[in-house]
Each structure stands twice: as structure tokens, then as C-alpha cells.
Amino acid sequence: MLNSITKLFKQLLEGSDLGEQHKADPNLAIACLLCEVAGADHQIDPQEAIAKQQLVSRLLNLDSAQTEALLSRAQTKANEAASLYDFTSQLRELSQETRYELIQAMWEIAHADGEIDPLEDAVIRKTAELLYVDHSEFIRAKLSVTENKTN
Image 1 (tube, rainbow, N blue to C red):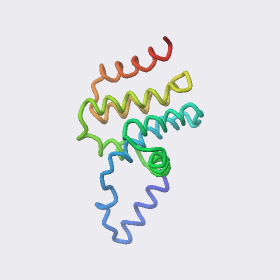
Image 2: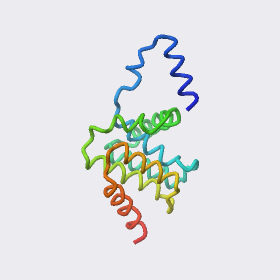
Image 3: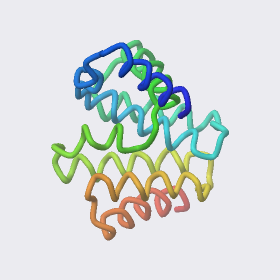
């Protein structure tokens, strides 16, 4: 985060047009959010990494090479981001169903290793709030993932 702030001040001092810095790229924003939840507990389980790749490929209809390239860019972007708002602000135009599917995918990544860390829960909860996903839909997405894994 400190790097992001330093970079911002440097751009301001250089007179850069900061309006061009945040061009909307919904696919990148979605991939970044999935990276955020996978790394929320500061350890990415191999099962979470696999789930992240499969979900990006499925949600965005990408082949494996496109998925790898996008996830690589997304991980870098997620490491530089100051907050989840950097990503969610690009996704508010998505349909309610698509936002629900994103929250459900985040739960799938968080639960891929068999348990949901409180930090992963917090990232998903905050993302749902920023995307205006109703709490009932947030809970429905969580239950659809956790109940399917246990049965």
C-alpha cells in the first residue's frame, strides 16, 4: 500500500493525468478480487490456486493461456491496490446475478481448502457490501458452497 501512495504522489508531482490510470477492465477487476480472497489469510493453498484458475476460466470464458496471463496481471494489481474499492468500483454496472456469481466464486476459493478463514470471510463480506449484494444473497452464496462441499 505504501508503494501505491508513493507512486501516486510521484505521478502528481510529474503532472500525470491520473484520470487515465483507472480504465475500467471488469475482467481484471474480477480476477483481482479472486486473488484478494485467495491471499487474504497470507497463504495460498494449492487447492485455492486451482479453484481460482478454474473459476476465472469459467466466469470469464477464457482458455488456459488467457487465464494464466490475466491472473498474473491480477496478482500484481492486487498486491499494489490500496483497497477493494479499486476493483469493486469497476463492477457496479454488472447485473445482480453476475455480482452474486462473483461472491459465490469468492466463497468457492475461500472454501477450497476445506475451511474459511475469518480474513477470507471479511474480504468477501466487504466486497459484497461494496457491490451492493444483499446480505441474504451473501449468505445464500456462502451456504450454496459450504453445504455442497459437506454433502
